[in-house]
Amino acid sequence: MAFSIDNNSGSGMRRGRRYGGSTLSEMNVVPLVDVVLVLLIIFMLTAQAMQFGLEIEVPKVKTERASAQDLNVVNITKTGELYFNDKPVNINLLAAMVKANRKVKENLVYIRGDEATPYGVVAKVVAELTDAKIGVRLVTQTDDSRPRRR
Image 1 (cartoon, helix red, strand yellow):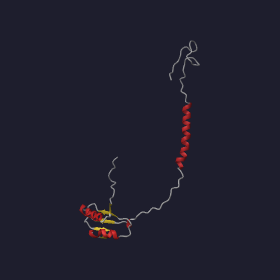
Image 2 (cartoon, helix red, strand yellow):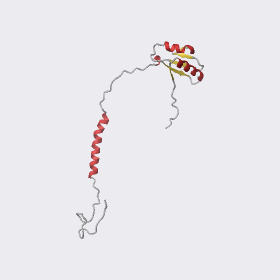
Image 3 (spheres, rainbow, N blue to C red):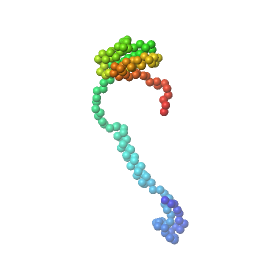
Image 4 (cartoon, rainbow, N blue to C red):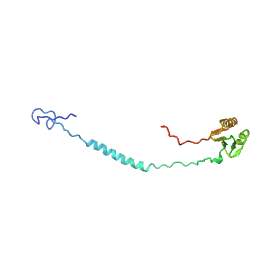
């Protein structure tokens, strides 16, 4: 929209304006106010739903978590000694003891070893258990002292 002021205020040719050749230099803010009020009403209505949330009844299910006593755990010390559920065991009898343990339903063993355990001992235990078709999981602990990369 161009803004111009005509020096011929009323005399001479009319340029299609009611009040001479000058244009209005003021902006019409009524549509802007209408839009702002509509947005305000929308936000006021949706804030109610966001504050209270939707009333949804989720189905309740029974969760079963195995405790540490119910799991097959093989502990390996720094010196390479093996313990199955806190009982000393020979590596040759380990697979048979895991299969004989009827408390645990799944055919899975958690191996927990010391940081200074020789890798050869861990590899022998894993090989013995996988030959007997027993699943193996290694237990680790997270190190939260390092800064995280972004």
